[in-house]
Length: 175
Image (cartoon, rainbow, N blue to C red; front, top):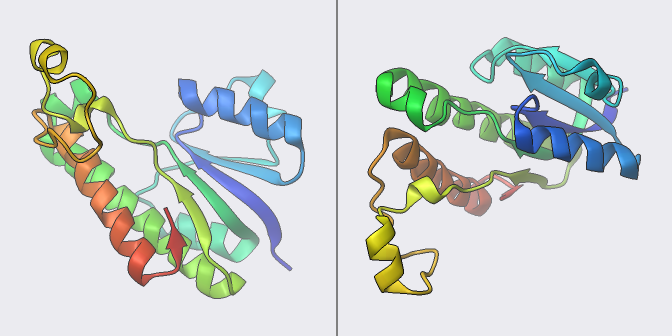
């Protein structure tokens, strides 16, 4: 029997740390983390299972699918702006390919669980093509304005947000 759990990718980052603290305090479901780096031991003891691995590793995601009944995914893993600018192809492979792998994972979980999986993918200011001066002149900006990213990371994030909308419409994943 599969264990109910929440999955956090990119858990060793700043947002992941706070999220683990909050979810562990609630204590209502097991926390499974997936990251290239190990968690600080003080955080590691707060999770049910810490998986060292990549969002690009489909067999690993398949093993997690077989072991856990995940109904909530926090997707925080990515190659961030600076590294993405130095390695745009790798950034695309990880940020877009990895997100697709996780959306497929969530879709498979949904089919297996018989209900939608909630998939949380935080946005970034990098999706907006705003300079400081433009922002000051624009005032309050709607989410759909200035979406002409100027960095590879921003382009990847914006595209992945669109992929999330697609899966939400067609694949029983709530984004």
